[in-house]
Image (cartoon, rainbow, N blue to C red; front, side, top):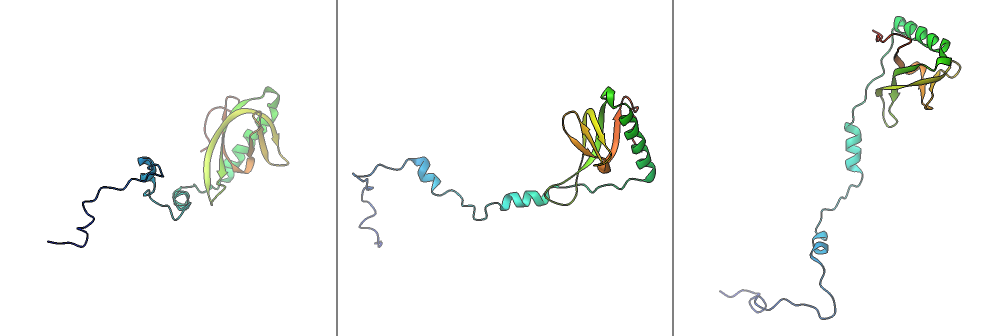
Length: 142
């Protein structure tokens, strides 16, 4: 059988005298996959990330929290070590997460509705759901 390339099929491979051969690793990189939609992968991960909804507190729970905040304000000179659980809104989408932060209280700012810790962390009073510590007892809010 005679084919259209029989005249060149058995010729030796050409090697240039003027240029160096490309390293194998660089040759392989030519054929690596191309990401036409850059950033799409991270957008999918962000959409799939779950957030929690903020809970609405009952009047009773709010009263207990206010009582605890008053106890903290009264003993601020002792710099009590406490744990605060509060809702931290998500910066990129609706919802957020409940986080617990521990530290010594520096100030309870009633005007700006913040609890300021010695570390500089600012906790919005309106987002609090629980405060625990030795001066308050260690029981959680129901």
